Image (cartoon, rainbow, N blue to C red; front, side, top):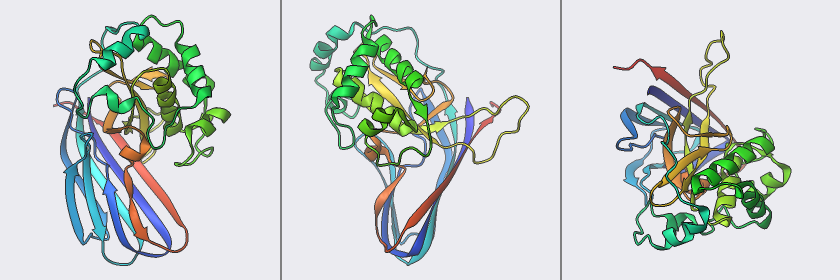
Length: 294
């Protein structure tokens, strides 16, 4: 599936800011055999005094910029074409959950995709007894690791309420879980906490999701948003499987991967530091537009 992706993130400051240095993880990832990216660009206004690019430990493309002038607004704009080559996972080849710990221990690789990085607590996701108990209950009847992961995603989809005003970017998973509401970040981080508590390595994935308007209604420009879902390691035979608990489904061709990490802190679209006094507000718009093949 071929898409045009456009993203704009704007920060408005009550008083002029200065000395800003930012890390940007805005563009979709190039994943051989899964996702091809072309005609990509990132523009920044005001123009940065310094700009560089590197790949972080988890393989995420990262642009680093420094803003030298005082500014009351900064706008980050990204655009690219993405060819999503995978429809979704094939037949379940994973073994029983009881054997997963031995499979993890047998992995000697410590590269970016090794399951060992995604099992312990991370800065934003720590063990929570209530979430672990909930996960184990949801996964109890599954005969395979992947089946257990899917069962947990479906239960969270059923029991949690999507509410764009209920949480903030800094809301801990245990708080969102206690109230059973939140946005895709909350769904993902709760599921990751539950999987890790049950012994399943789990990663946080940021990206884009194509949304389909109701029949007969036009697609709204800028109506889409960046999305988040979960990547779980289901054993050597199955490997990593992506699950979207917000929508209660396995990830397919409508999901476009941008970055992968242990939690939101590793993949934040914009992070960094700046000198500022007073408040700020943020606005963003995302367009994921299907294109004709060829």
